[in-house]
Length: 218
Image (cartoon, rainbow, N blue to C red; front, side, top):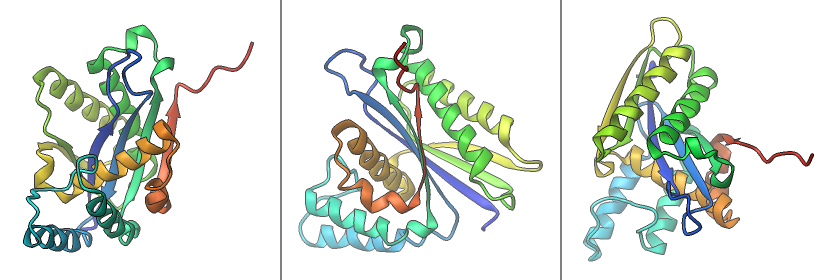
């Protein structure tokens, strides 16, 4: 199955441009090919948590207990050779007013990120790409995301490459849960200058695309 690439997507931060909102908005993708070696140890750890009295359905970095978060990061760190991590980072104060509409900004970020990933990181032997995002509750936003992916793939796909776009609940895929963890670690690095978790995934991070860079002094 090395000819089929999976891309799992997640975001951290929020689209609130008021002072109360996050400073940064981060969108992360984690690329993998089957078989997925991290699946078995993650599944084993989830059931060990359940057997020890925890009610845990799936891993979610922000909500997980500290010792759970640490163990999941340890599992991810042991399988970084099987992952390709890339992200788009936006400092929201640099976003123009016309781009602050969540639908358009999300669409632009996703198109930019996938454009970079498909152009520079997928093996030429890959013939099929399966892009999986978390379930998107707002129909208008879902349409924007699908359109972004289609445009990005169309611009950069090698000849004979096929792709599909799937929207699944994160509890159904360890890939989405890993993307959630990686995105949270990158977000913490930028938002809080806390590299504790980022350093554990850093070897697999192929790109942090800081778009809308700071303006140079005139």
